[in-house]
Length: 237
Ligand SMILES: NC(=O)c1ccc[n+]([C@@H]2O[C@H](COP(=O)([O-])OP(=O)(O)OC[C@H]3O[C@@H](n4cnc5c(N)ncnc54)[C@H](OP(=O)(O)O)[C@@H]3O)[C@@H](O)[C@H]2O)c1
Image (cartoon, rainbow, N blue to C red):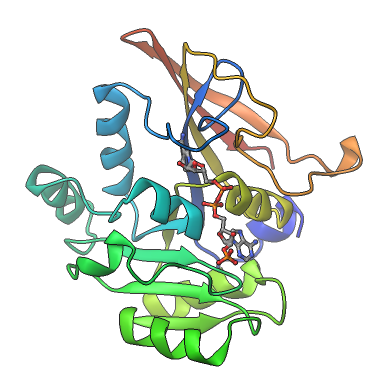
């Protein structure tokens, strides 16, 4: 899907990606042990962005490793949501194409808003039953690969998702970039070096073979706080 075709698809949500990245372009250490390394300002920024979104989405590994419940961040941010005309709590979306998502993941112990799992026909029947017990809805969106344009259109029509915040990880982000669905990147650049050729980056997966297939963005904002750079990239149309 090209940038133009997304612009012509009013039924798709506006998609923002948010992440913190080291100066050597890593979003976690190679052993995945360090995944939170931004400042308190960066954490507040994450909650501020969540307060503008109908739903927050993550890949299976990110919700498992980070133990994030994808919550609002507290009463202050819930008030901001209401001011923006949004529901008090954001919807939570987890992507797990094979259904390997761990049922003991922290997010399933917190019931403040519906959890939606996007998966494929690869999910084993027993696992599907288990996930259906845990989540508000489990949606099969493709045979072996998730068809993200279809999935996002469904999120908009069925669940009213107009703004979708994707919080990684690298594999999920890559699929969204490849499908031409990302409208904005909020990238916090942190002055650290992790190294490690297998450490995750903003967009992993297979990558593109030709420059012509790159997704182009404009840098639309750069601000410096406490030694970090808060940047915004907007899709070039
Ligand atoms: N610094 C930051 O801001 C930041 C933000 C987010 C994450 N992280 C870090 O990034 C790491 C996780 O990244 P990751 O790339 O390994 O994992 P990820 O994208 O969070 O999750 C990967 C899993 O999600 C599912 N998935 C993702 N894309 C899919 C697709 N196109 N189709 C079907 N299923 C898909 C698959 O689940 P199944 O295996 O169940 O099919 C896949 O194994 C963690 O270390 C995390 O802490 C850092």
